[in-house]
Length: 154
Length: 311
Image (tube, rainbow over all chains, first blue to last red; front, side, top):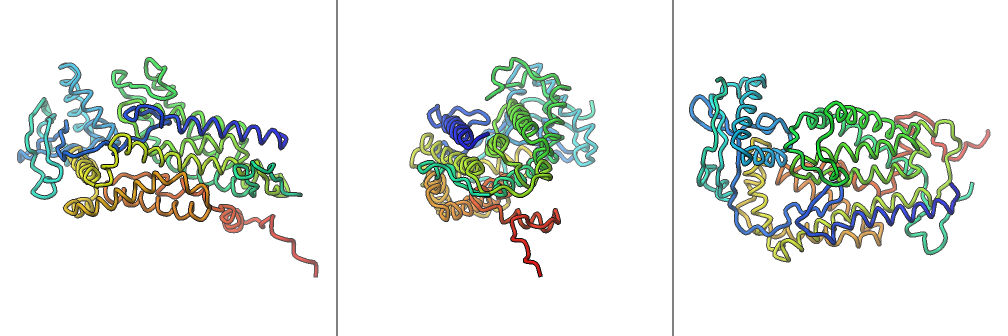
């Protein structure tokens, strides 16, 4: 390319990329996409420390409930995507919820992880926490409702 | 050879810089790409097995009605990794670099099509796309082995670096703007930030993921979060201004890096591209690293050094 062509190419390319990257600034700030994003993470006012989370728990032999790691609950490493995947599976139709619970149990059985393989039951639950009190007084949920249970070794 | 300077009026966006500066950025971004993809290969492959009912296409893949065929997607991931190596070493760059850019765009977008969009890969991807369309393999590459001598400084190496810097500050500015649009100036009171840190930590613990033990130590102190909120919002909204002064930009880069270290310490959220400092490398004279790379890794003489006088 000649110097003149380098100038034109650099100018046009720069303008196009800049316009694309800045375009989300003119969109609804609640909308998000990839790779062009409004970067809305942690942007909404959050006055209430309450958290309702749908989670996958392993009921251990002594009756305690332990949250399963994302790789066992959904097969995904990313916690944000795990959150959404659990929600989608649980609040879809009834058959899907049951199938999801069985899938988790199967992942635990075949995980090769002796600790998690001790689990008796998989419990999908909706739990309500006060996230600030969680660190001040202890990690007990304000409320917890079991949505589905299935045995690890049916 | 003479230095090529852009016409007056365009020199700010087209600064005349050494080819090594852009090539070194390719090496850094390329090395990051190879390592990141190698570590995440299994994770990326796992998206081939997801159920179609979970598919929520976004961005350039928003047109898709159904997921890729699993085998096709696995092939795309392997090709992305293979072309990342070509991008890193600068082999057949004019062909392999754009292919890598497009493949990375497709694979990363696909990985964000399953609910929950991540924000840690956007800047890296855009930097790759910029480098892929610039002459970033003029030196320190397999393509440049037979080329002698090292090209003179030229404005054709400068615009891409300026654009990488601009895109970097723009993404942070957008994050600040989103806070103002969604939460107003109340964000600087720190209450929202404190609640977010608490919510994020509890969510991670209760979903069986890693969380930061430091957050539980700081959460009782509301004033800490007010200071952090003001500091982070000022850094984000003020980001575009740092383009005007090179020294200020360097200081901002270090402060932003510190911000990401803070996010890692408080929320166990790893933004690996800025934490590795590669996101901010375009603000620095990376050609100095090139001299070190030639001497220490490639073990070749620095071609820009003056020839020793006879006798």
